[in-house]
Image 1 (spheres, helix red, strand yellow):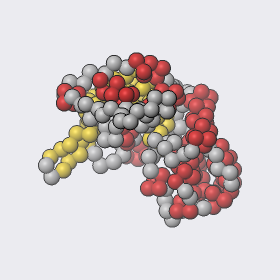
Image 2: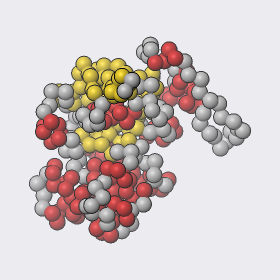
Image 3: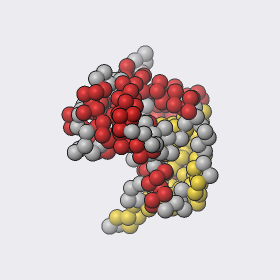
Image 4: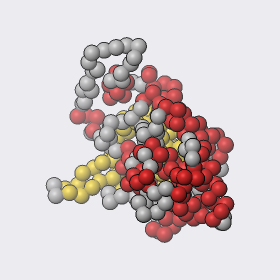
Length: 278
C-alpha cells in the first residue's frame, strides 16, 4: 500500500516570556514508500518536525499543507487523529523510558497497541507481541512480556518500544534515534526488520539519527536540517558529495579509525543559513 506524505511550508513555534521561538522554519518535503533519513545537530528541529507530523506536543504548527495518503492531517478532528496514530502512522520516540507507561507491564502495552488496530483475541495478540520481541533481539520474550518498564535496561526498553510501534503494521513509521541504545549486533537485527517492513509491506520510514554513516548506508534519501530549516536534500549514496558547507562540516567532523587526528574540525556556522535556506 502506498503511503505518500506531503508537507508544504511547515512552521512550528513555542511561546515563551520573550515571545515565540521558531523551532521549525518553512520545511517542505514529500516522500513515498522509501527510507527517508533526517540528520542534523541536536536542536536542529528533527524531533519537533516528527512530532508535528502527528500533531503532538505543545508547539503551534502552521502549515500550508500536510497530507498523508490523500488525508488532510490539518483538517482532522482530534478523535480522527487519534485513530490514525499507531494504526497508520506510528512513531518510535527517542526516549522509551518516558514513553512507556510505568504502571503497566510491557506486554500489556504491546497487546493494547495490537488490539487497538485490529480485531484479535488477547491470546493471539500476546503471541504476536512475543514473536516481535524475539524478532528485535530479546532472548526471553515471555519474561520481558511480564516485566514492568523499570525492570528493563535502556536497550531492552528501546526494543520493546520498537515492537509496540510496528505491531499494528503502520503505513508510515517515524523512528527517532531508534538504535542509539542498542549494541551493534542488536542494531543490525532491528535495521534488518525495519528494512523488511519497508520492502515487504511497502511501509514508508522516516529515520532520524545523528549517525551519518548509518543514515547513508540504510536510507534511500537524506534531508539535512539546521536551525529548523532544510539546508540540503540528497540521495543517500551521494552524501559524501554533498555541497552545502554545513553538510560538509558535519562530514568532516566524523572521527575515523583509519585517519587518526588529534583534533576534529569544528563547524563554522553562517548566520545566513537561518535566513535564506534553499
